[in-house]
Length: 350
Image (cartoon, rainbow, N blue to C red; front, side, top):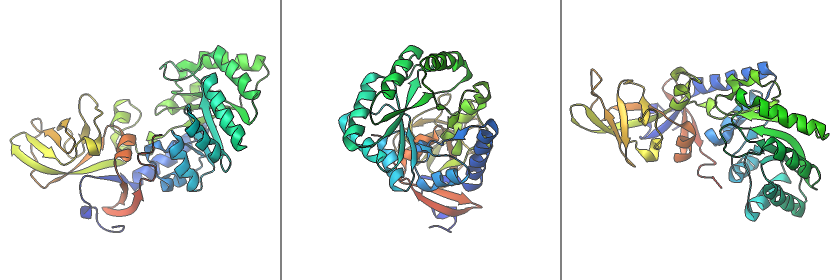
């Protein structure tokens, strides 16, 4: 299959434009270099070791994984600097985390005493050392600690065997969080606790990173492919979207409606403005409904309508989810299949 024309692929299949992906990797790395930030790409977008190696080759200092299972795959593939910006909870997970930390440089984030205690117990039992960053609660109020609690956690980590306090993590690291960050840093400084790493992240965070000069590191994942959601948020343009879901029209019995062979199992069910994907060949078409195996497209605003057997290309709403739906992604260039990637960490969400 590698080296063959794109037309040899069955549909639905996921294409990655190699030229666009390579440009995205280079541009994000250059931006972080310009800002003086260590760059740590988040692999949850692609889940593929070969793409992560390309990101490291461009200058990244390490990778971020969202779950222990992802980190296990990438550690087995030779990656040694892995951050998991997630609360790792439960004896089975913390045991696996500690085992990873015996062979790789592992850092995690925490936002409560219970999380710290669990990780510490596993690290001590395994004889491993784990670095911990305290997550500062952002304005989005997902996970994270308040400035007062962040100090308490930093003190707990610093006093706990087999753990090391590494700094703070923020998601998303928008500029509006700076007063809270400064308050936390002041509390840490007054207690004599240095925060070596201030890790920011989020798809649009790099655009405001210059307004957070305290940051030392940036975590971004979606940038490698981008998607319709990135475009709708103003983070990029369609010209920077590397991922396409290639689909075939399987029914066209009405004047303004066709059915694609790509439904929620191929493109997921997230939407932008009520639509499930952007059709590259027909920008005015509306992919307005999906079943598991069917995509419903309204062509009433288009001058022409394609026929059964025609191929269309969908820019998905959310690239990260699409990667996790498919066994393989296909890197393409000039109409040819250049790379065939198994999605090594597909489905690993525990």
